[in-house]
Amino acid sequence: MIAVVASWNSPPQNPTLDIGSIHVWRVSLAQTQSCLQSLQQTLSTDEQTKAERFHFPKDRSQFIVSRGALRAILSRYLHINPSLLRFDCNPYGKPSIIASQNGDTLRFNLSHSRGITLIAITKNRDIGIDIEGINPKFPCLEIAEKFFTPLESHVLRSLSEHLQPTAFFTCWTRKEAYIKAVGKGLSIPLNQFEVSLVPGEPAALLNIEGNPEEASRWSLIELIPSSDMVGAIAVELCCWKLHCWQWTGEF
Figure 1: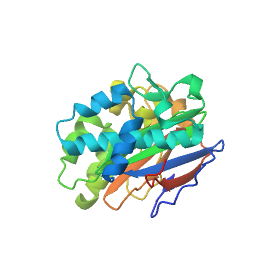
Figure 2 (figure 1 turned 90 degrees about the vertical axis):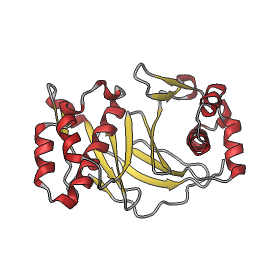
Figure 3 (figure 1 turned 180 degrees about the vertical axis):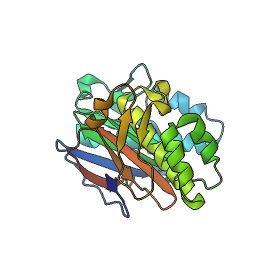
């Protein structure tokens, strides 16, 4: 499935997440100093400690905005003060809200690249999101040989040279979104399942080695956050309605 996003809407103050809906929030990591300070105050002690470990101020600021905006956005759905939200992680590092704060109902995932973070939110089903900037000079064919399936590498090589970078990062984000949705990260080798990758063709999880029926449980959605980036959402089941919001820095 394809969802090309040319613009991001202003969000409602109290968003309603219906069953079958997916909300994606676009967050600019370049915020004012006053916003940065407000967001930092909502972070947990562990998050603030991690922020201080960043050597470069830009990296520190982007971490604070990403984590603080996540708290601010989730608090709109849960009606909990952002600073009171508590998170847990599974054995592979996938974050979730603790069960006592409806973490078993509200599911989320986030990804960041080139100064923006995308946060995907849904209910009662697993979800993963990934975004990447398209790098025309990246050694796409070489990396594909190491990490993609033989069929994916063959399809990539068959494309014209100017399409190969877009196709590579299209494939990469779809794979990353799936393994993030499953919640097992890179413990699932990227060459053990296949996705579509030709630019313009529908996003799809084509095959999973050793478990062909598993692919039918998932939907892949192409998401284009800007002209030089590609992204993907992986979500359980096929019934979905996508809403895209631009976070304005408000709590």
